[in-house]
Length: 637
Image 1 (cartoon, rainbow, N blue to C red):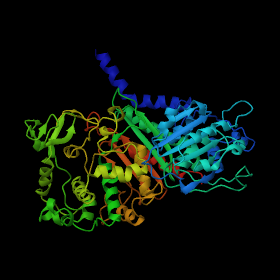
Image 2 (cartoon, one colour):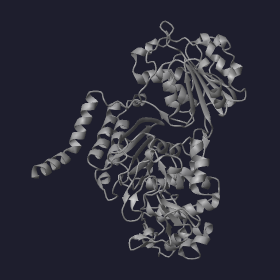
Image 3 (cartoon, rainbow, N blue to C red):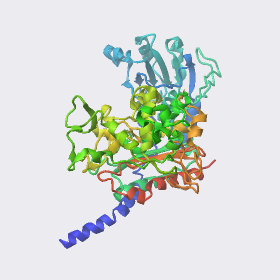
Image 4 (cartoon, rainbow, N blue to C red):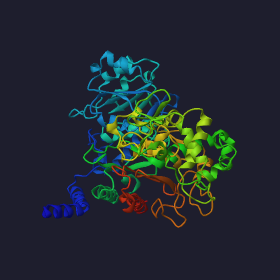
């Protein structure tokens, strides 16, 4: 028995080393290769014009083909696609098209149809496609021996089966012979990629959504088009999915991130995590590690995490900047100017909003609201119900519904708490009030407005309050096994008790996201309020919110920043103008305008117990940032 215990101790002590050994073995044997997304399509260039690329690196090939793609028609400036709250269908006919669809799937949900021949598209399928706002039609060379780049002109007939008023984007992945049979008036957009190579498919898809620019020109006349023709488009600020080498960054330097993330899992800091790194508007690292919970589902890039206090910038501060830019709120006014029905005429009515957003208004850090709702350690039945019924409609967790009017008691509890002196003290309570102000202005719940007016237009598909309204539990990482308040595994419901008591929608917590969507929000901040060709607030506004607000206080308005001497929530290599926020559940989102760097780390380190300190103690988030900065600083310029 003693030997078994000793053996268990030895094994557990060496788990981190074992994990690192396995990882190093995998790297050396080429098993871990996810710095570059896997492809399914052709990987040989066949045409005389592009055959030279076969001797180039993947990054060099990607750069070259991206520049060679030609837009020959762009009616009404349809490209690049900006607002994505629209229904999209795709029809791909001919050879391999999986990489094209895979990359489109990085940007938008869509109805996909891939067939070897246009004759195989049933009328019922066409009728479904007609219900969409736009249709992307791609014709792919079939790769037949001796005719690797040949396109079948018969496949153009599929265009005639679509309604004339439906927006149609046509992409041709093959040689120019098909242009003799093409009627340009039948479609709104024409893109020519010359070959059906997997990189051509990838970069055309990114061009459509504005992640890349178009600058290709015809080198010879073809049917309806003259030599030198080619419509240029600019990238619209949407994040690109690229290769580190395209930016002069050695991908081997980024492998250290894998080691750090895996060591965190082996050491018990968290069961799994997601990491996304973007540089110069291009995602160069995107990986998921481990499991949602021990012995649970493997973490996928599309899984959602409770991002806790990162909600403060990804939802509340974002919305406040949006409303501030519209002239609907002035953060130099006082709470009593906006919500006197909440603050009354007391001290809280005199709180300056800017001071509050900088955590310098004298508010205490937090209040354990739920403790007053327990009787002998159990939920008070006068406040909670086990089923949804009239007057009890705020869902706190599975099988727990709170009385609708109890939120008023929570605000009263805050108002009756004496204010302290005006010095920097981090407080969740600031965002209870900013939510009240914002919702009074927009005349609806914060989650509804953000979804319809910002998240969906941006194309964010995985950033949501109340995630169980949109996703199955299997796609959401669980948080704590709450043994005190809800007495259940918190899964799909916000971890923060105060946010849960507000029904899951709060200013300080409640938002769920994946790392990729969160990186897009951070890119919106770096883009000074613009994303995908859409403007959500001005450069003046973001500059005001992200700057230091008060001497001796590192905070911006809503945003966290580095300490005056560097470091703090972020790594010491982060610049003094960087900003972001961390989250109690094990999240970090940080953006640095100096080098246009974004690092997002999401985990559920509170699963199964929020008392687990290893993520912070091991410095995992800042170590990952450090690796990124070292890689960026050593890049070939």
